[in-house]
Image 1 (cartoon, rainbow, N blue to C red):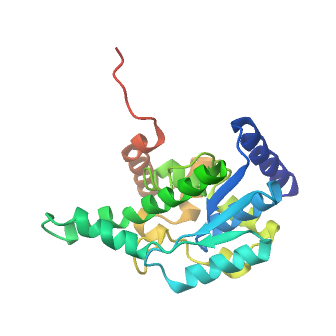
Image 2: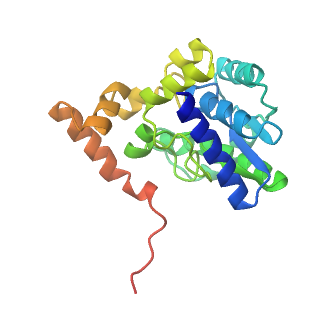
Length: 240
């Protein structure tokens, strides 16, 4: 784990240097992935890293956990509450909408997109790179919001499945209760990653690492991969 941590720390430093930037900014959600990214960034650039805690009608525990992660690792941070911005945007966007039920996911996806706007504001102000928290498991099946948490400059955890992220987090000293916390994108009250994907991370990780899974699980994963292919590509342009 130490070798992996050192390689990731060096990789972050190299990406910042080659980009001509001064440091890194990242979201702190109170979850496993963001805590791991925060710990790595603090190691890589202790004097030029910034964590943003960006509650948007979030569970109070998430902000508490995010603050605790920042304090454990000595990460400088800012808290920017996005509730009013979200309300104002939803009011404007839904004036002509017919049914709240039909647009629930569309509304939920506004939250990570607002967070992306806040991250890039501070990245531009400070000449920092935006560091994403997505891991291989989520990237593979498209479990991220396009131009939301997918709108970042670098993804240090992008080659690690969720199980490997947990192992790295333990090594780095992420509090155990945060490691054990049910993964959630915080899109709505009670939302969990596994329920929304229709998969357990253990099933997904095993399939990605070994190709092995019960037929119905493999079918579900391949369907998610195919459906989300557009998220992993640059916008299409004509071939002529």
